[in-house]
Structure formats: structure tokens, C-alpha cells
Length: 282
Image (cartoon, rainbow, N blue to C red; front, side, top):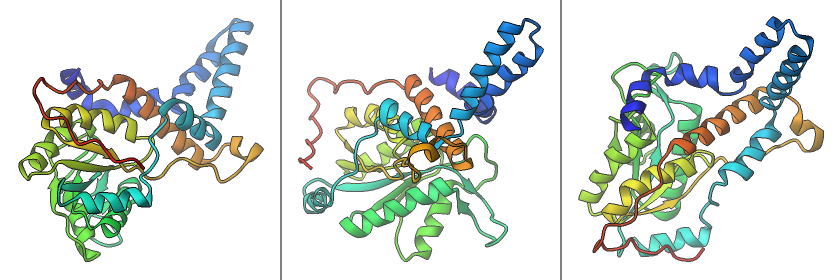
């Protein structure tokens, strides 16, 4: 599976555009136009038209999040206070996962994170201010990106401008699996026993699987601290009307559903290994 993923890596942006909604439905629409049999053409048109419509609705994205992905809830303020109190006994780090970057933005002349990457980093900085825990960032150069400056290096610049410090950064990975493989050995070597994992809610189920697969054998506890839960500002009929935001959200949710299906579960802890510390009740 890993070798296949590496081979397909450079093709991922193209596959995402063609095989995930809303692009998924365009070939079926073309087929409906090309079919000569009236019934088959009508059925293909109705199915593709309905699929295309739902692929553009915020209500669809919210349904996919709640019924398919089911991300864990965010830690409560009481839980965050407990993490701060326990940090001396169980060294803990806040780890933000990357989501893309531009090496040089036209307006500022420096690198900038993608909107999703900046959103995740903002949440990590908020958690760091709330708990006093050190901050780490994992993100290299994505499959669709070019340049030498890694996303972690861009994040370090942003963090420095805000008067904070990025204690650890990982800039070699290209995807979530690589994030886990590259950063966790370094955190283990630094004595870290617990990781507060920061990413978007729809990405969290898949990220947890990759990180738990690497963390369980190392005796590191992974705690989810998701942000950006999909919500629909409009209620009723408006939630089921097409919008640009709805298209982005549905594409993102379906991408994570497919990715979760392809992601292995975490292995059991090896015999004789010390189990990671149990998280306190929220």
C-alpha cells in the first residue's frame, strides 16, 4: 500500500480533481449526452445532475461529517487545564499538521500557509497560549507544490512574527502518513509522552489512524484537538442550495472518507511495551 501511494503521489492532485465531487459527475453527464438510448440517457442525466447538485451543498458536507467521518469532539477547557497540570509528569506537545503553502506570496514577498494550514496553526497557537505547552509543526512540500521552502519553515516564520516559538518542525513529509513517520521519532527522542494533535475535524479520523499506528509502539499517547468542524450557517432549504463553500466542503469531506477507507488501523501495542497513559475524563 505504501509503495503504491508513493507511486501515485504526483498524480494525487489530478485524481482528486477527476475522481472526487464535483468533477466526479462530469463524465457521467457527458455519457448521458452521448447515449442514444433514451431511458439510459435520462437515468444517467438524473443521477449525475442530482449528484452534482448535492456536491455543491453545505448540508451534504455536514451530513458526511456527522454520519460518515464522525470526528471526536474538541477537548474542553477543563481538559486543557488538566493537560497543563499534567505536563510536568507527562511531557506534552501541541502538534499542528500542515495543509499546504505558497513559498512566496505576491502581496508580502514571503511564504504563506494555505487557508486550511493557517486555520490549523491559529488553533495550535490558541491552544499553546491556553495551556503553555510547546508547539510543533509537521509539513513539507506537498505533491502539488513546488519550491524548496517547506511548509514547516513557512509556519516557523508566521509563528515568529506573532512572538511565539516553534519548538519542533518537520519539513520532509508530503502527506499525513509522512507527517507521522517523520515527526514522532524526533518527539520520542525528546522525551515527549503525549501529543495534542491539531488538524481540521474532517481530517482528524484519518490523521488519528496514521499517528496512532506510529505512536502506539513508541508509548506515545495521541489526543485529538480538532478545529473547523463543518457547520451550516444557513438552515432548512438554504443549506441545500449550491454554493462555492459547499463545493469545497463536500470535496474535502469525500476526500477524507476515501482516505480513511485506504488508511490502516493502528496495530496493537507490542508485548511487554508500557501502555500509553490513559487520558483523563473530559
